[in-house]
Image 1: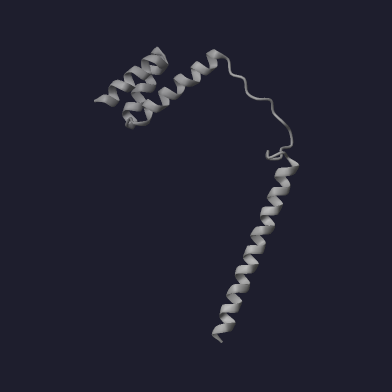
Image 2 (image 1 turned 120 degrees about the vertical axis):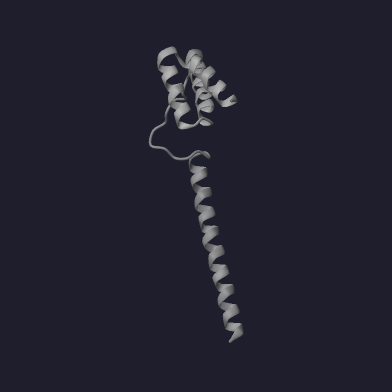
Length: 100
């Protein structure tokens, strides 16, 4: 009886291995057909950022990073400063709050 259990385990292992091998060949076939890229319905041209937009995104990232460590009440104060005086002033205020 012990031999039957071991044999069934081995057969299950072989079956699982064959299934994984089939999946690997399917993935390989897809990669070959699409030159390694994921298939898509339409191709999109690469995003081109202007220098001004790149700087704005960088500033937005700094703002988000400084807001991350603040408490909800402090965040509200920083948002108010941003609305009134702009993002650079808001970043300065947020950095001061985070330091204290």
